[in-house]
Amino acid sequence: MHEKSLAIRLHDLPKNHLDIATSYYNISLVYFKQCDYEKAIEFLNKTLEIELHSFPPNHLNLGKTYDTLAGALYEQGSFKEALENMMK
Image 1 (cartoon, helix red, strand yellow):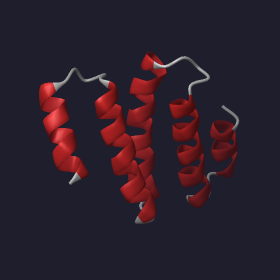
Image 2: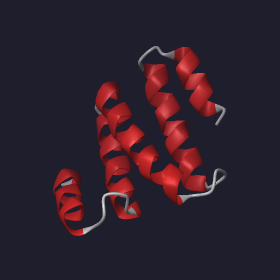
Image 3: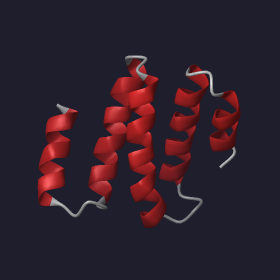
Image 4: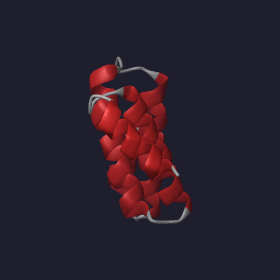
């Protein structure tokens, strides 16, 4: 369902629109819950690409995305990278 929503948004909106970031984030959560951390990280990085250009550095959404990314990296065993993202 989220991927269908993403396809519609990618067709109708500019590629850096925040609604697309929301779709990427929601898809990352599905992959995270399925323990597919590699795919979760892929979609979280896509989320960050948009959010970093749209929000100030201290915005709550950025914190949420970095926190989720840190969790996926931790579960994957990338502890140093997880800590780096947690500290952002």
